[in-house]
Amino acid sequence: MSTVSRSGETRIWRNWAGTVAARPAREVTPATAGEVADAVRRAAEDGLRVKTVGAGHSFTAVAATDGVLIRPDLLTGIRRVDRAAMTVTVESGTPLKRLNKALAREGLSLANMGDIMEQTVAGAVSTGTHGTGRDSASLSAQITEVELVTADGSLLTCSAEENPEIFAAARLGLGALGVITAITFAVEPLFLLRAREEPMSFDRVTAEFDALHAENEHFEFYWFPHTGNCVTKRNNRSAGPAEPPGAIAGWVERELISNGLLQLACSLGRAVPAAVPGLARVASRALSARSYSDIPYKVFTSPRRVRFVEMEYAVPREAAVAALREVRAMIERSPLKVGFPVEVRTAPADDIPLSAASGRDTAYLAVHLYRGTPHRAYFTAVERIMVAHGGRPHWGKLHTRDAEYLAGACPGFGEFTAVRDRLDPERRFGNDHLRRVLGD
View 1 (cartoon, rainbow, N blue to C red):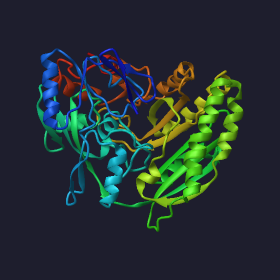
View 2 (view 1 turned 180 degrees about the vertical axis):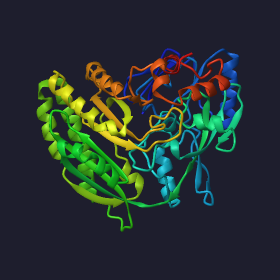
View 3 (view 1 turned 135 degrees about the horizontal axis):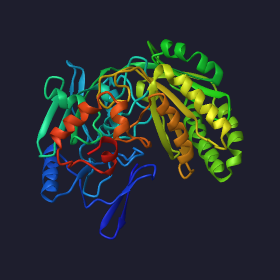
View 4 (view 1 turned 90 degrees about the vertical axis):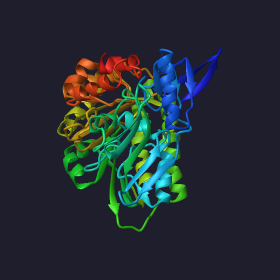
């Protein structure tokens, strides 16, 4: 989560990874969309910019501001469930964890989700949070309506029928179009997923990647640098019955190995970099094959307690294996010691202007390093490979791309910036980061 500390009469906001700090002129915690609109109008009167923060899980400065910082802590809860339309409308500051549990109690679920659920719903969709899926796409692609406060304090309802151009852009808006106050998601009856997790060699995964993707509704894998080892995850819908992991086995897998052992290995690897390859070999063999079935959020998501920094790029799905092999070759010929696995996921093409999967079937390659470990050399080398494959950066993760590059890489970039120019010509919702990635 983000943290706040006192410094004189100002409060310093920091993100989860500790990569961003900001000291706003003032903070507000509105409880209604009307109070959000009032806060935006007052900021305009005072000549201050406005940004909303969520749980702080973006690694970039997308939410940083020296003006008015809006905390959505009171904008939480489900407004309505429409079983005829199969939608749920939720306040923008609602944590995904709370939404997922509430939906399950109602016998409902999102079709797909990312691998953590600490973020707020608005923060997650505004940066393009996604999971992995052959047919089902990101959280933003599951939105059917957005309620948005714009720069002049207007409250807009946006959908495919009402304000459609704004709706298209606002599903993934980087906070650049206004303050989201509510989101309506498409939902479906609660279902079960059968999870199959299995160690597999790098050579086999890369040789069979296309088949593994085609045969499974949700496929992903992790490669452990300095080894030839991967862990694969296949999630498919199941008729049941539910067979969740046992309490002890689940704790061992999710906490002892995935968090405790990883924390120990990362701490040791940061102190003694030469030990990283050996630690990677041990870690890559610690996870054994297992299969279980449960409701979606208990399968898709896991606790992530080890703090890290991350960069993720989306490349055409057909380029995924080539790009990953180049990353492996780069690491092997370099002095880099990489203690975190490389994650590979997929998504179908969508029609969202700033989506990394806009207009093309996509593979996401994510690289991580333990917080406090120098990351620039590794991330720069990986980014060079991704750019050569037409990569698009994840909006919430570290990258060095600017508006000139992104205008060429993202087919909907001009469509998005045209909506932004119309809604926020004075850049009330701008900051230095948005100036870099979206231009002036």
